[in-house]
Image (cartoon, rainbow, N blue to C red):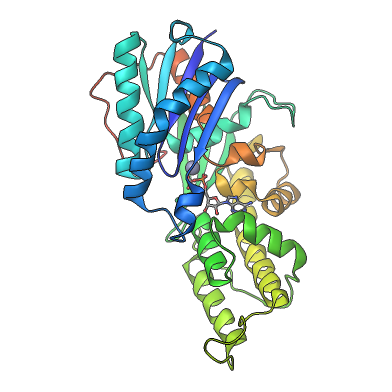
Length: 345
Ligand code: KG4
Ligand code: ZN
């Protein structure tokens, strides 16, 4: 039995959660900076960092108030120390260190990607959760990552594949920008794709060499650019919007079809090849229901995926991963550092 405080500031959400035994969420506060970054079409690192400084203490207070617990009730403090934006990670890690010192509770540095995997075992009103069954294959797909890992037990990872260039979330965001759909692109593309015809345009899939479990999305991004240009040709500058809403929806659908085709094929192949008994998805792009449906259709073993609000960055996933590390004896000291490029394995 342990109550873990989870702190997450690796990108553009200031998030604090209180989670019991890695499963029961007592509070999960997320102060999103989306509105601020929206005007620039992406996350501006310095602004993200400054905003974390402003939002972190109110988020800590709100989480404790919602959970109705005091500092004495907290058993350990888990904080994302990588991967992520350096200036953003620094805020969470330093607050966690100060807090750990002030309340005399252990500090645990957590890998953000591991957090995304553990979001699968948080109890929610939406779905019943079971304990993880190993070995499992996890696919973490987000704005900065595309990692396919074999998980043989708690904290035991072998990386099977990764992206050679862009992360899928980045591809969603860039495609959305080209289509004039705003930021973040994932949810906007998913909505547009629902109205579109995925068969009108055929966008490329980069299958790479035989046997690899890696992915690549930069060619797809370029193909979207060419398709958008071809559709806008003949439009006068300053005239009406170049693409009709039908064009936008059809390109979004073709793009989403290409991404979900490749990702679902890779995770199904990895699960079969490594004898996984379960597949677990995580990361912002796992919020995409078309991706989940396709992965479920292709995998021969049960597939779990957190509800969309727990796929994107949050503190509960960090507290959950932190619980299992705490239980297994991990303790970090006050020289815990940020690791902006920390891999999962
Ligand atoms: O995990 P996350 O919140 O932050 C990172 O660790 O990067 O992921 C954010 C990414 C963004 O690129 C966003 O566009 C994408 O996840 N995303 C989605 C959806 N919701 C968020 N992509 C596809 N479909 C969605 N529904
Ligand atoms: Zn993330």
